[in-house]
Length: 129
Image (cartoon, rainbow, N blue to C red):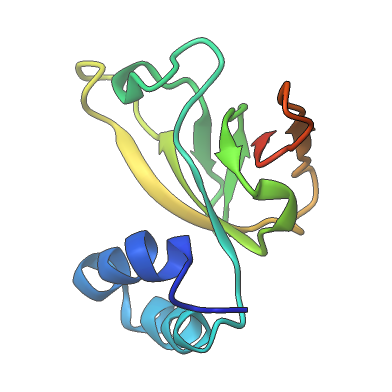
């Protein structure tokens, strides 16, 4: 895998460098640089489209982990990704522009499914996740 043509290099790597914990940097950045891990982004949702302030996918703090419930759409190559970086709602108490968090999780986690969206061309670069 070429690390130069990936969401890891172009989107997640810079975010981790700036906002990630030391543990996240140590775990993910070397694998991203070597092209050993594929990432997808979970932003758009069926009822919100690209209006990220209207997202409904929730992450509930369970103490030692977060339980994520929701659906993403137009997730490029989710069916080939190892991990996802995803925007989720963690708090509903403020305005719709508040309470949104950025989470990373393994696509092999229990309950995570992907369904390729077949385009008229026959290709399926996008998925419902």
